[in-house]
Length: 178
Length: 73
Image (cartoon, rainbow over all chains, first blue to last red; front, side, top):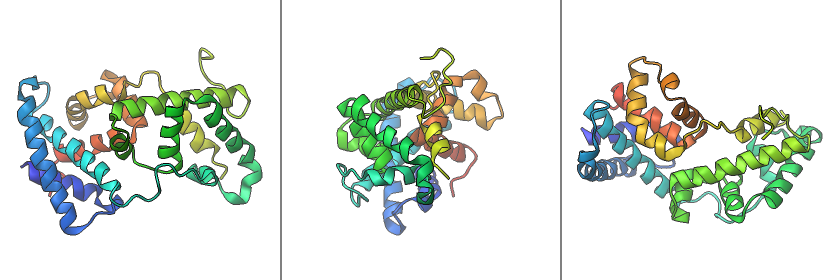
């Protein structure tokens, strides 16, 4: 049953992955095997708040995510430390033909990234936003957790928005002005 | 297209966002409520806020919903 769920999940995600055929099936089998280990180890934590199968499927999904994250580094699209800031506007769909409309905004964003973020926040921002590294893949390369990386990016986003709003590049719609 | 709307959406944070750890802990409960048509977002607004903002957790949620609905082959 776990293999069937893992196969379904890799098939669902398949169109967005650079993994195909036997490799995809192998990934599903590995995810199911590791999920079984996780489920067995956490059986005592099941509190009956959902059906048992739903609780068990969750670990299959998590294992598929982790393995896909690991797979990214086998064929990375860009080095982790690359910094091609010219790509930043395109990452948000800005049309080069209308640079006059967005040039100042993205220049201000880059300045804020350099001056307002901590070195670790900047590293996470560059990897995820500029270099399009999947968050789960970054977790592996930094030896961190999904929660920690997300929180770091969350704080960076909040900081950058506040700076851009304070300088008139974005509307300040914070209810408490924070 | 000047990129401003997408950038605004990306930089906007929701203070109710519970983060990945709590969302992953609750994911089976939240997904089952959602699958059965219960108002999961109202009961767990912090989880809902997180799943909207976090790509990986949102993807896991979609996968779990698909598994519940028998989306596996």
